[in-house]
Length: 210
Figure 1: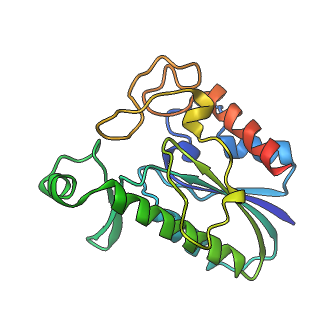
Figure 2: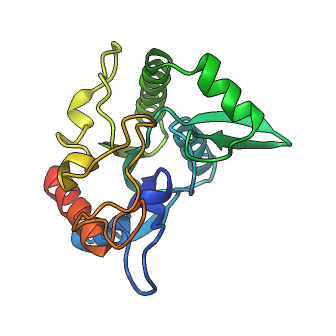
Figure 3: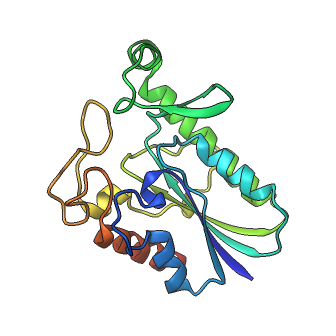
């Protein structure tokens, strides 16, 4: 049995899609003809959450050959553990004191890119040593990270980020996607792909896999 898995944040989750519309994972599942599809993504998560999402999936007994698509969100988002849960702080989210302190005194591009590289190393290692066969694929959202840590297989990355596919724009202050931009793959949504955008991502993934 071949199973398609998708991990990530609100983009693969399908935020802002209308009733009856399909995520790029659902569309890709149909194009590939895989036996089943599991969307492991969660809204509002950070790049660090990818490791937890994969860990949760691997903890369940299974017998399948998996195709796993990891959607890489902006590493400026930071994961913290509070009140028994892993949570995310981000520059466009909560404006509390912890968020202000982190982005004023701790956050840096260098730290973000280090965390991103170490997360990808973890994911590729977990997939490589899984008890099932996993073909892991990586799609960068709207950043351009230098994947330069030894051990990362860059051949597993799509050549274009989703942002480049869409020819969309980001906010230069937060590095997050610009709100309410007049883009054919986003409009009328605020921050997420419309159905045409999900179709484009699915098509690019399909061509990369095949």
